[in-house]
Image 1 (cartoon, rainbow over the protein chains, first blue to last red):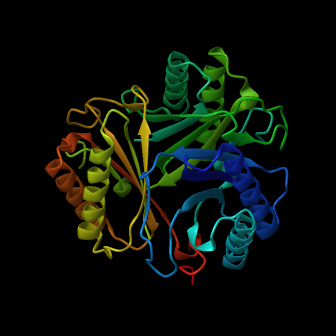
Image 2 (spheres, each protein chain N blue to C red):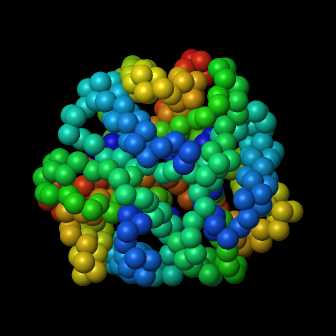
Length: 122
Length: 122
Length: 122
């Protein structure tokens, strides 16, 4: 049950945002070996100047960063995370997002921290 | 000092959002045995199509999901969390939210990770 | 690579929001001894009534709270965090934010949880 948050410029058209969300989901499914039905995402469109990213810190050349936050259960090792990062970046690149503009952060918790609706809860 | 984030469709009227926030707060107070004065919440209204949730993953039938994120200090056991989930869902149901549409995620940190204003800080 | 989220009233002018973001970044650099180029921030402007904070819980008098969330790698001790809180509050005060209205929350993860773009990633 990852919950994925996407923070993106509101100048990106609505249909494009959705295609990015699809690509991100496919990257998680591929990279983490996740069930394709396990899709929970929120897209936050933000005004000009509200998404701030140093253009070159650590390397690359950032221009229009898309922030992707993945909240998930602690159960994937470093290799799986690295694989997921690469899969998300590749899928987004196919949709026109430069790989330097993909910024992903993972936060982990445990299974008991999730309530996916009354009938989804164990 | 939980900080609670609510992500909800902007089609929900402003006064209704506030009633939902009240209900969520009451659910935390009841479920966690929390001080009623300990209220810190942010409501993010989002455009159509920006809140994505698989309609049936893990069970139930999701239609208009309300995402609720609870950032809190690691000090509650699984029973307290389960109790809180149920209390929030029950309070929201009384306001018209279907229990299948309540999605809650907890993230934990420690007491030293909070600065509740200059005079609130120890 | 902290990722800093700022949730602020949309009644605060756009240029002022940016000055607050600058002040917060300078507070992190000073308080954590962080590289000044390590800047990643998102500002979420929110409508009236969507930022809720108890006016006096734990002390002080809150009026127009600015929520600041710092997602960072687990590597700073309590003293560094306390120092960062004070530095951020001082810098914001210089921009006109009352210290009682500064609310900061830290969430920690590990280095392997970050993907700062294709060429920024190790």
